[in-house]
Length: 226
Picture 1 (cartoon, rainbow, N blue to C red):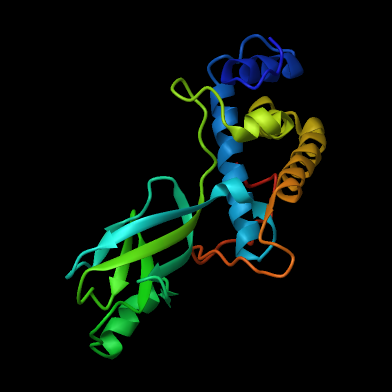
Picture 2 (cartoon, rainbow, N blue to C red):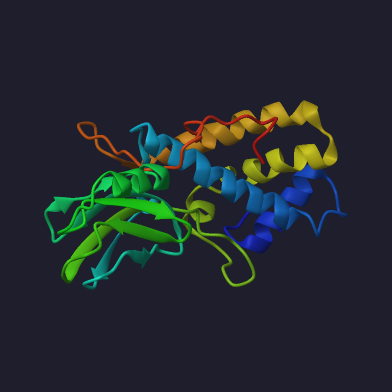
């Protein structure tokens, strides 16, 4: 089957490139690992203010009721970028440790001023003193392929990114270190092409994603990233 923009076509092409017909059960894992790697690479670029694919930058409205301390984060969110309250108040992002320190330092009241990502929720401080409309901008995960999602925009427009990403992930499983470097180089080039073809931000702006401490800045190490 040709690399035709479908999940089944991708799996068949990976098997063809590997010249193996006994990997049916693990090729979906190679693809899933490639998707996770794409998401981390794109988010790392956002954290450095570098261009990222605009189709991974999502804006959503969130209604915050009076007394709210936690609001659910979007299910596809990898990391927040901006959280704006009432159309003009930009909340400052703190990691959960620093937010807790802020709580202990002084009992602040009024409208929320800070937020943190805690598990699958956004924590607000102070607790909302009234109802608010808000806008959250975030970097989304790469839409996962599977039985219920046969394609996405990356596979349609940039099939080489998926192909080489899956092949990179196959190398440790097959103990094929010789090809890993070649596929890793092609995978990185494909991701750069995606970011440069339809980038955010523009030349005069900087995009800063709020990502967890310990993030390696999007640097990809084929020996430890999987």
